[in-house]
Length: 303
Image (tube, rainbow, N blue to C red; front, side, top):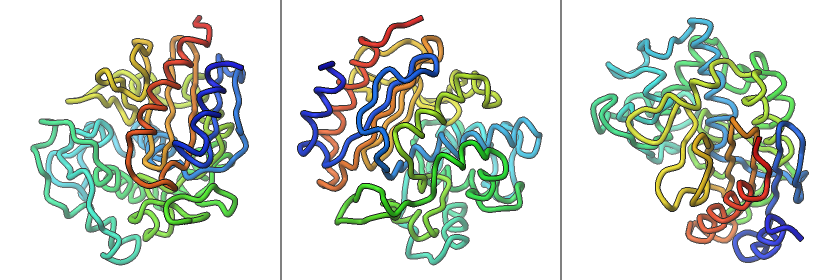
């Protein structure tokens, strides 16, 4: 049994009740574990949907990366929002504001905590602001934009799913994130559900030339570890492992999901769990991600 499999079997019932994984090398699956189980992808929504829509809007000059938008505070741009350096507050409970439009308006109205571009602060509110502008220029909610602009993604991933693994408190079939749930399960920062197989297929598109401006998205870092939507390894405790490839890019999700890729090596590694079913303490999932993603880099041949 490979270390990739043994780690997941060991983590079953300890880190999370359900775990799934897929590793692809140059588009070919080289490892699978429970690949057809359905999970709440949480913040992987940011890169699998919203980031690609933002890049497509930039390429079409609908929302250029360095242009401002009337819905935003002065000085905000798509680039800064994607890089999590726009100065937006990281998170706030907005579900009590009302429905979808009220939550988007509340996120846009939230005062900035630092000047735009000055500091890196990972922010759900920043992606709510970005999504609001994308919906304004696209003339549709983000789920309809995804179906219209990137049907191959919309056909593989869903917004909620009745067969998804339960999350905290036995929550079943609907998004775990409170703000996204109050938005009807469709939000720029969370809401997508999918299998490890589907996430791997969607992610591989980024390495296969099917996403505009992908190289820029992987390399144009801002004030911190994030490039355009995608994160890069930061520190010895990175979820990418202690010795990730120099070009590694990825993202994590609060429910226990993670996705890391090496564009140069053509490697995509997807790890999905419902770890929040056991509570919100992040220690166990952080340790698993750190070890498992490193095992991927160690096991899968580079190129």
